[in-house]
Amino acid sequence: MDLDRPALRAALLDAAPWLDATDVGPRAVDAGTCDRCGERPRLLPTCGPGAPEALCRDCAAALGDDAWCDGHRNDGMAARRWADALPDRWEDAVVLWWVATGELRWDARTMAVTEDHPWSDAVRAAIGIGR
Ligand SMILES: [Zn+2]
Ligand SMILES: [Zn+2]
Image 1 (cartoon, rainbow, N blue to C red):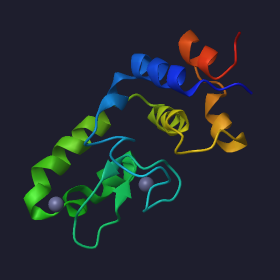
Image 2 (image 1 turned 90 degrees about the horizontal axis):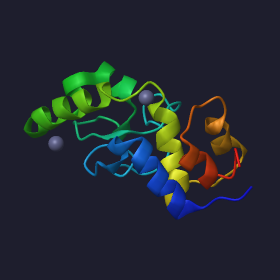
Image 3 (image 1 turned 180 degrees about the vertical axis):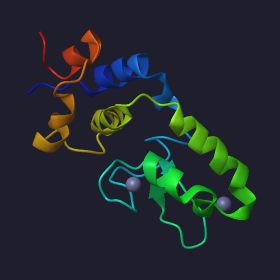
């Protein structure tokens, strides 16, 4: 399947401007699954003593202040508020972003996030579907 990575990055930023954040979101963490649940994508970098390195939205909410050190408590609250405001399908956008940046391979697993998702025409064109 044809994949136009630069076009996909541009289309994703247009469809999900929150992907542009650099201190939270998929740009702020290494590509992969949450260090706590191992299911959902990593979303927020954390720094609490003994806390996992990066968490998905649900796990960050579950750990709360414990996921951040005392000095970054306010940052942690801001990060969780930011995550709370994301659309329900944030996980798909995060995975596709990592495909667009080349951090994840474009394979059966990552392609699965494009199923049943109302992606914009530009996103669909960039990943070679709906043409
Ligand atoms: Zn998690
Ligand atoms: Zn800290």
